[in-house]
Image 1: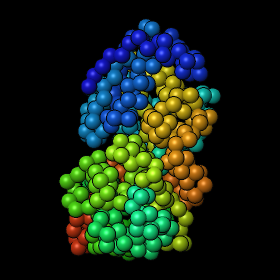
Image 2: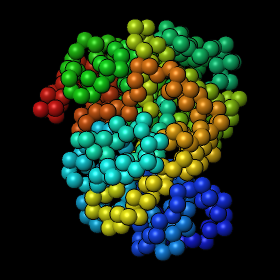
Image 3: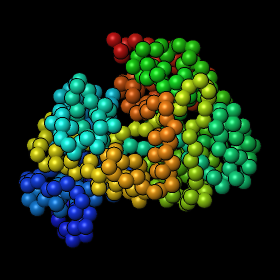
Image 4: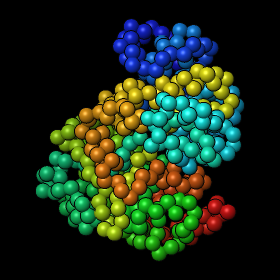
Length: 417
């Protein structure tokens, strides 16, 4: 969808704009392409565009929202021909192809401004080759969201260890339900399971070494990760035919009570609530310990905005990045009634939403092992693609493990040359 948003919102925005950054004199057109296509993020993005448009009487904001999965293959072409001014993307390794291709603009000058001191904790994730290439606007925890009411019915508690996770799962299966829903049609959800089982088995440092191509996929420690995962797969813990579902299409298994848990990011809470799971039915726990000798590492992906190197309205694009990273805007867009995630500006307020508070406390106080960006962000794009295909195959055909690991190792040797 493409929409041009104009300033009929001035009256209703007057209060919120009092604490927003001082408006610069901007004119012309600001073109934004966003992949915030799910309902709650879409509403946030449309609101941001409308608000920024209303703040600048001589500026027209054109917002195009594209499907999140489609954007992963469209972004390069979009940045190469008739490039927009601002786009959504991801932090860390996922920036590398577009930085190396000269498609993202170096915005180190913005990061030198006092305003960006409040984003210092995320600066490393936005830095490549000693320069900064975008700004973060949100991050979020992953963990196990579960049917609290079903756990109570079965007399189960939140598992702290892998043995307790396995025991709970057996009790759930015995009740005629599946332990976990998942949709792996778009592959990345399987990456979350690998991230957690590998980091809980071998530790954060090992996981990142694997992502950096420094460890062979045929290493016995990697095989141990898959052996731990296979315990659940061979039990029948996951919903059937998950390779045919997107993550959204797999939600009804949980909301209808056919499965009891979902390893997922906090962005899914809005959809779970829309599916009828209020706080009396829905809860969250940190992925349990597998190897007591390693500390908790957590997936906490960071979502970002970037200025295209071919941007036509650079001044407006930079002002938009200042706007979306301001403390007031960060507080509002990450609230429980909006993205339902965590602000990156240290001066912003964290929502009192139950799950946002749980995530904030977990990442602040119980993630001593390290913070992972997620499988398809920590691994180079080509390795991530090949790797996630192997992870999905393993979940469907675990007996193929030897062939899968051999293929992934061949890919590692080719990709990381």
